[in-house]
Length: 212
Image (tube, rainbow, N blue to C red):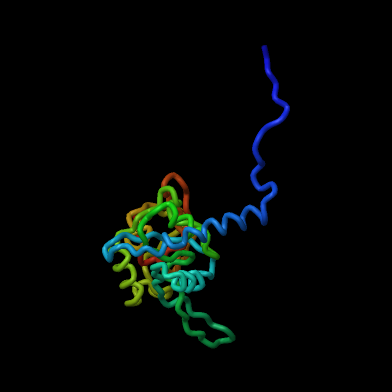
């Protein structure tokens, strides 16, 4: 004998609730914020966080206000000429769209991080984040502080299709292919790398790359 059910028990998701789904998810994430404020040890690894373009400083300020440990290495950006006048370089993030964070790695902490305004994701994804050793992060910061990563500092000449390896920063050790690059050895080439099965493009300082 075949039995048929023409009704079901329970409530549909998002039916009869207040606010939109994303608003409720934001409230859930904010409830986890205290997990991201738990400080890790001084030698603990960091995580690279991808943020919206031009919002690196804003995210850093938000993290500081929330008492979440973060690091945003800075360097000199490009110089411009306008009507024959040289416009001096300003300070820009060492890697566009990225900054570093550190906390005790718990699922709740990663969920909270993604709920912060202008944050897109964690490098590698929250389920399999890429750990960046503290010594590598400190070395990368030192390179930025001493001017090695400055936009106008000449480096190797790269062209589209070149295979490269990343030597410093949150992408250290990864291999990639140059997508676009300048022809004078300055600036940030776009490099596409495979990270946990996903192709990830990034603008990387040319000083952090070597041909392979």
